[in-house]
Length: 207
Image (cartoon, rainbow, N blue to C red; front, top):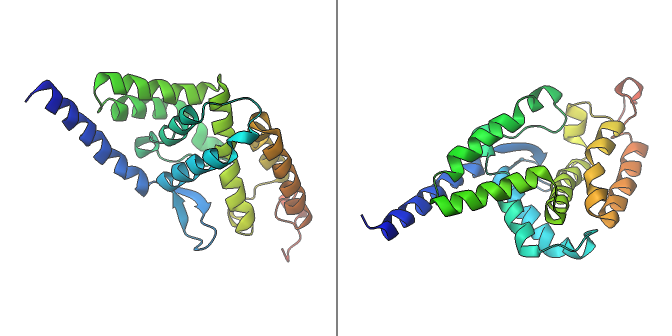
């Protein structure tokens, strides 16, 4: 096998491996069918959001770089699984699980590409660049939309409170003031309708 053909074989192995991301189910329900979204769909949707909404980022962002972060950031879930935002117990050990996954999955690629994708994943996690901060804002925003526009089903199932959502959504305003304002308005509407109570002991039974 030539060096060129070995490189191609490694790249194709990686391409086949990441097909597994389509089988990683998230808690978010799709707006129309109400089935659970998978992580590959989530990543695609975030990439489309970046294409459409980049002008609203607080800082100037390199769109291609942002797209790379969004398409790569959840690939580790093939091994590590999706960690539900409001399950504190499942967050314990999350970064270690995901780092181990990154080493294995990106390690399928030729060394130069493995290093590039690992660096992109680490950049997203570190949140030290404008692109990473904007990417996280979008990552937090879409599940929030899913929750609200499906009648708060997963919020209700998991007894999520307004304070929990507001805390979770803080990075949206840090990445985009305009999108942060949208979140604040929807939180008010969700609270007024009973979807996000201050306390579940105070939630009206009929809602």
